[in-house]
Length: 482
Image 1 (cartoon, rainbow, N blue to C red):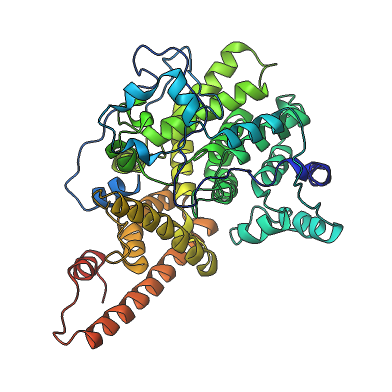
Image 2: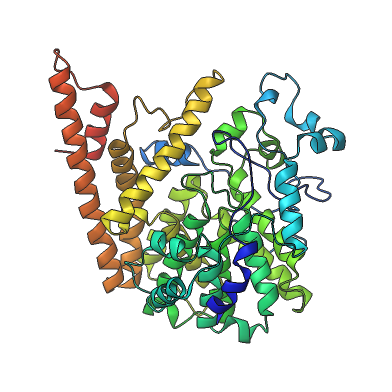
């Protein structure tokens, strides 16, 4: 049903129309937050600096904070924040002092705002995309019939849908799960909201783009079908899980939190250097929900609860809180005290599922996993190049001369991915999906070790002293590489 609709609507939901320099991130997403006396959006604990090696990866790649106590969720309006302007780096004024209305307007990415506003008014851009022909639509439909398979190729699906994988996938999943009927959603309004979400991802980002969001959403769909969880989920749980997966990185600027902090970016000041990007993703999502009026027909108390739970889910994806959630999950499994009949425990497992979906790339088939690894490292290296250009300290994992893709991936798999997915497998009870993911993870890690071994052999042959670089030696020791 939705794919037929795509034929007539691809014109207005393909290219983002965001024309900013490739090497610059874009922080702007959803505008000013309404009145905010203090940042009380969510009760969240600032993560402690852990002594173990996991923290080095966590800090370089950057909730639960259930926010149920909050009665009003402040949103960010679309297209109201300036892109990252490095002219401000040499300015001694604090980021909070440049936020006057006049200066913000001057720094706006006008083309992005203009494009977004035209889309929202239903005006088709002049340079419209070609419509998909029946052959491509037929192949896309065939792929959607297998959307619950772990070998689902999101890159191929994105090509078949002409760059509209996120919109097409979500329309399909909302119908498959019966959410359109259950919540009496208007399909036109749903489609408009999903286009807004897709358009607010930046295709300039090698990794944090709409294809990544679609990939995470497809993984979330697979996890929601796990028998241990599926039998307890309500339609609200499913809708929250899919929406959070689709929007968890919306308007990502292509740089991490430490970068925003050390460049005095206004988002870092706004969110007091705590879960900066995740807060922005959440508030941006709320802004689009309200702007599209997708849930306007639901009771006010219900929409407030949805907004708050979305916040809790998206904030949980903060990599700096990895140990916090992993410790809680281990404790629950050891004590065997998870009661999925309880909404609070179900919500916790939705948080864990979203965290798994967000970092599941190493658990995919090698061909897809390798492509994601190269994409995320390319994004890291771009940030490192920016930092070097503007004489900033290069962030961990962002130095292309020292941080190789194999070493980054081995560390990520060892300290972040493996611990979480091993506990997820304990929860699900070693289902075929969990065993499949762990099997891919081990094979992919072995391949990266092989690549790293070859790099070391090559460096030794080129280095008459026979010394391994300090960075590679550390990776060898930490990654237990032969």
